[in-house]
Image 1 (spheres, rainbow, N blue to C red):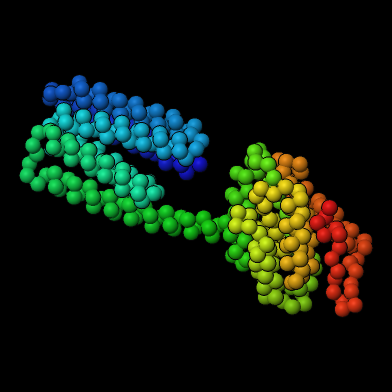
Image 2 (image 1 turned 45 degrees about the horizontal axis):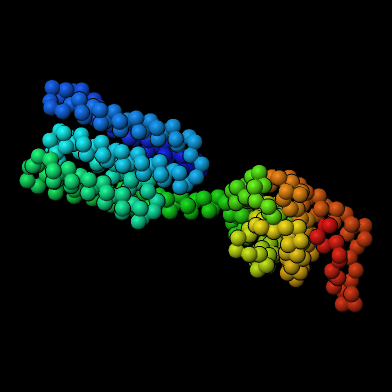
Length: 337
């Protein structure tokens, strides 16, 4: 959302500045024909940019942002086309407005099809001005269009390289490098919008803690401990759905976010995860469900942690039973209920 608003604000400022430059050109050449009409057109363009800057601070959805940006773009193209037509056609200095618009579209339009459509509209508008305005010098329209296409290609290619690198950096910043699970930042980015205000019912959270993980590191070495963490995440993912997520928030502490899962579903998933992970090591799991146990990510984690802690206390007070083969038997309090 913040990135979208920043992009909209930058677009609006660019439109205000470019139309302001055109207004300055009209004032410097005020003795030439049609300057009053051109001033009115470019002033409207500045006003649309100012409205876009105001809207950028209040936009709440992607669709609204696209509508506002597209409206400002259309206004800009119309005003630049009218100004260029009144100033003599394709040879007018005001046609540079088409260049700045095409560069901005190439730099900040993420979708390729939308980019091609908007650039075709921009170049087509310039060609329409060249067709209906006063004849330009031979080759001028060709050079102008060729230059626009080169700038569009270079800017679009570079923008996509930067966007890909930025996406990779965001992924690295949100993932635990050892297990591939989300880290604390990734957990906040993933779960924050889902839990904000608990607008969607049936969001659940599991807190998972490996039993005696320190002993594994002490007796078998850190390589064995790392391998155990990786196997634990893999086993949990086999149980989870594609829309769910697992995050590592500590040495052997994990948080699992279950989307559209009520209390019964959360406890059932916890039971399946317990069975899968216990093939590797002992595990304790606490659960919490919104809005019954809290209305934010933090309160749900606190509730799940409390259940997990009570479960550990009960296990220390009453050690788990072992069968004749020395294996730990499943207990009814596995979910910390």
